[in-house]
Length: 113
Ligand code: FES
Image (cartoon, rainbow, N blue to C red; front, side, top):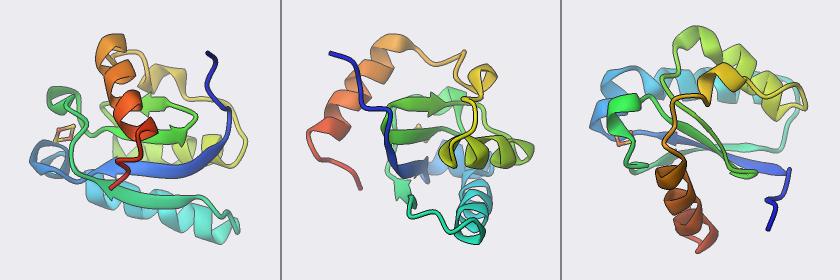
């Protein structure tokens, strides 16, 4: 079944590996850009997506886009995608599709924090 194209939440991994690679300020920068644009999309911390070596990891839900190896300079492209711009495909290329499907099942089950 195809996934919704909607983006209601931007889930940013705050666990150790991703945080050590800078996920928290990246999420803050995305949140700032969304706020400035008047977007209702929430940026929220997430406990761990299980893709720790490929962090920082960010998942857009319910759409299901998973961005990996996100760098501070990628915050603009991710915010632009959330605001209706193009998907930043280069940031989604290294995600294991099986892990992605598993994590999306968990998110679909309502485990969003
Ligand atoms: S620490 Fe971020 S995915 Fe596990």
